[in-house]
Length: 148
Image (cartoon, rainbow, N blue to C red):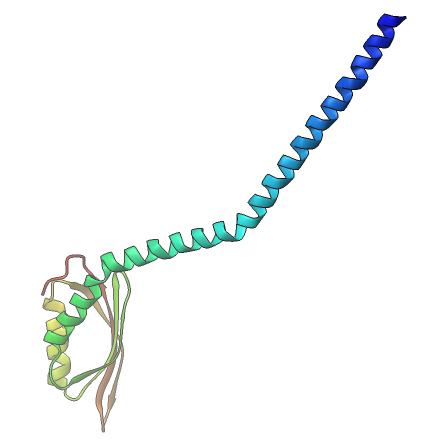
């Protein structure tokens, strides 16, 4: 009988010990969950900054290409041709322009086609206005390693 009482008493004491360990672990888990929840916004901000840094690095690496292309177009642009818009993407070029004369129009197209940096020149809409000249649009492929 005493053995049974001792076993029951030991079970009762171990129950208190196990309950205390369970409570401690639950509190520790709750604290760690609170820390994780508090850092969720911080982690989102860090991931956003990392994405922005990647974009900035890409832009810095590729920024010379459009600048060189604009400089090339500037050098081959006849005096009587005026650009209305210039759109440069990674490998495409779109131009909307006005040429005051057919000679300027022809010279600009010839210059574009002879430029190694620009290939596959495709003319789009062409309109002749009596007061301003020839309005035209074109697109082309931009090659890597742009040099005139």
